[in-house]
Image 1: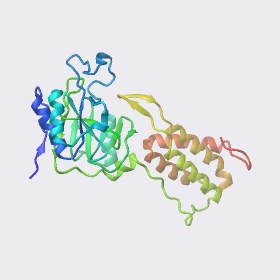
Image 2: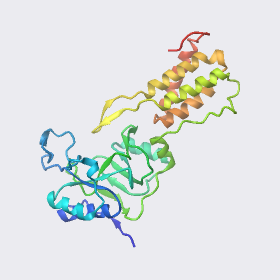
Image 3: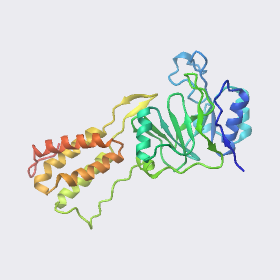
Image 4: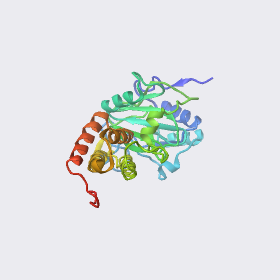
Length: 309
C-alpha cells in the first residue's frame, strides 16, 4: 500500500527530521537525490559566496554536482547528518520530469495548452511559482518552452519539498504525490518541449503550388521550428531568442514567392502557424507576425534569379 506524502510538509518550522524523511522517501522511490545549499534568515546562501550568491539555496553542495546524486537512503541520511538543514535537490530525466512555472501568465498558458481548469497530478508551490511532476519521458531540459515556463528533463534538477526558498517560503505540495506513481507527460506538453517537424510527404504535394514553392515552404517551416528560444536565468530574460523574427522572415520570403509559385496566403499561414505554435509562440502573436511578413513580401516579389534575404 502506498501513501500520499507531503501535503502539509511546509507548515511551521521544518525540522531536520522532516528533511531527512523527505529526502529518503524520494531516494527510495528511485529519484536521484542531492543536498543543496540553503538560504539563511537574511537571504544569504550557505555557500562561500554568501550574500553575493546569485542562486541562494538552489545549487548543489556536492563537488560532483548532479553526478554525485544518489538513490541510496543510507547515503542520503549521511549527507543530512553533515548538513542538517540542506535543501533537497532531485535530478530529473531518469524517474522524474518537471514543468517549472515561474509566473501566473505561464500557469494560465499551461492550463490553456492542456485544456483544463485544474491541473492533475503532483503540484508543488515553490517560492514564486509551481512545479508539475511527471514520469520521465526522456525529454531534454529546455529553457522558456513558453514565457515563464521551463522544462527540467535530462541533465536538470529541481528543488523539492520541504526545502526553503530565499523568500522564507517552504516548497510544499498543493496536490499530493503518490510515492508509487507519477502521471505521464501530456502529449501537448511533450510536443512543446520537443516539437516534431510536420511531415510533408512528396507523394501528396500541396495543391496548386509548384515544386519550388513546396520546397520553399518546407524550408521555412524548418527554420521556424529550429528558431532559438529566449534564455531565462533566475527569472530574468538574458537573451531574446528569435522565434518571432524567424516567423516574420519566413512569411516575408513566402510572400515574395507567391506570384511565381502559386503559393496562397491560406497555405502559407496554415503551415507556418502550426510550426510557430509548436515552437511556443502564442496564437495571436503568430497571426500578427505572419500577416506583417506575408503582406510585406507581396509588396516586394522576388523575380527569377533574385536571391532571397
